[in-house]
Image (cartoon, rainbow, N blue to C red; front, side, top):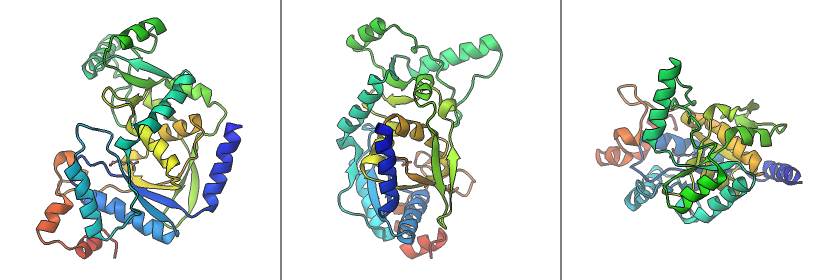
Length: 306
Ligand code: GLU
């Protein structure tokens, strides 16, 4: 029944005008890589007769700052990219993510994990020392969670939660995959000409991903999936660095009976040293370039949007 409803929504989505979104995190100033992503979203939304939404992905309450959010608005306006005024800020919608988490929990797919990062690192180190083999890594290169808390008894997990012990909530990947066994874990990849093809994903390689962090009742994966559905996003255009993680998103969409948007993954921009542009490396921001006299036209031309 729920699957039928999801199919119906998917068909309806295919016939209404496309909805794109640009979804930056206000944890630093935007750089040329963001400009490229936003301009490509604008171009493809225009080309396919769609609308482009802005979403502020600010669940990380310690790193996201108001001044950076303001910077996003300034930079996008300067570049000539406009959005409908109702901008969704994730930090105001924790209840939506909690509801999705509760549904997964009711299916028996969520468990609390009390391990600190350091403990996970040590457990992985021990496993590697014992086996003499490298511990498996996820597609981003991080060691897979070794499952320390997966088999805690319910009583113990309840006791430790009640005692206020800090914990994250993880998806039990094996059980989640068993639950959707038989459903196609597929998304539609589209290119700039509109050509499409189906891509089958295998999220098993991510292991028991975190669905809610210690300090926030959600995670990037959970909120992105919930928001794309709630905002009726039909076309996701984002960097190649998020291509592999799309497997997790498709799995969550199946589990939560949410439609799967179409996806396009664009190239990532490098700096002069060949490194990927990143806020964390303090790549030159659009604001810096603007202060040095760059014009929006020059930026567009540099990025191939003439
Ligand atoms: N908020 C993410 C970022 O700034 C983008 C997420 C997405 O496009 O799905 O990298």
